[in-house]
Length: 367
Length: 154
Image 1 (cartoon, each protein chain N blue to C red):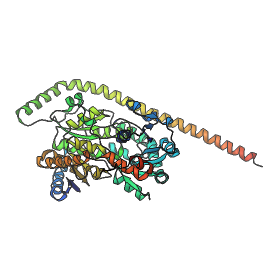
Image 2: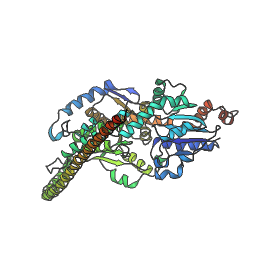
Image 3: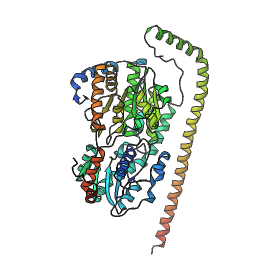
Image 4: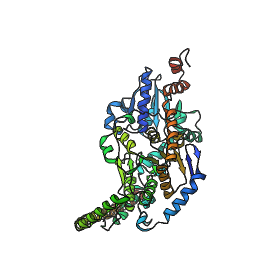
């Protein structure tokens, strides 16, 4: 059986791309022919060997196509025109208004993506989302039979040898506050910079804010953040840009605390990565983040920048509290790492594809 | 305000304490607190932009306020104890010694920054002038075309 995937973009460090690679691994382990198709203009050069050009995609009625949907792109049209059985994986579409004024083109693509969402979901054979939060958005649009298959997490990259240059640069006596994610407006990084200004100026001057993530997605927003760091006279705000897997492992290694002020997330994989790296996590109670945390770490809402600075300080200085937080995060990771995604995926696909169920259904005598 | 720790709502236990400490911090002024920039010219004023073009005009306006840096004295962070005190004094002495050189470099750098900002502003003004001129010519052409169509219509 051919079960291929179509993506709008394919990049290193991107959660959707990471999920596609893991799904392909599971599908191939079942003996399925499985490839990832993407417009090569939207593929990181380091991943050229991992995917095939979108123009090469073709399918028969017996095939299955999974489309990762998070923005409107020509890849969606190719998916919809496919003769195969169609399953859409909804990763959430960032509300366009966050990008207004920062990138008109992206805002337009996001608006178009959301506008098409309901029609696309009605046209396909199956819909799955990576969080209950995403599923609730679809249900609100009137889409039925939405299944939740939480975003897959792989600890493989985080267990690489951390980049020694980064360790050497930041493993000093300064307290490192870390944020990982693309530098885009819905992440509300300005809230973290403002909180850090209070933390650094009034609580602990021996501190540093590490912002790790591609700054090419919204250059105007990135320019605003740099200007803000300048206004607040904060030389210790470090815009580190995109990090390789070894680099990412190093940033988590040197981090004393991870803070995510994002206001809209479909799930937020960096929270899980930080928990896996035994870094205390503080995240805003928004979007799919409570699901990613699942009762672990610290969640907040309604805090201004000074209060957030104080909360960061509390977690950094209260040993008993830090132990409690880390214990909860360890328990969360235990649940995540004992997950059996191949079994979950098998059940999920069998629900839509009777032929798949016949070939890959639970073995006799099995659970 | 809501704070959940390890799945438990700790707003009551922690919230009041955090609110109180934050209120004390907010009273700090001068060098002890983060610098205050007027909302009109602060970086976050860029949130007001409604389009890419609007962003650019806001950005260049804000750039004009930031194209030079100062060499005023600043607080050198110091650690507690003898070593911290000694290190802070050494850093202060070094700063005083190098001040003349810093000021000279700052003067030259600020000059270049200011000229670049002016170049961006001149470029924007020139582009606007060209756009306006082209828009005017297009209007005239469209008016002529409309007049021709009217003539051709029996």
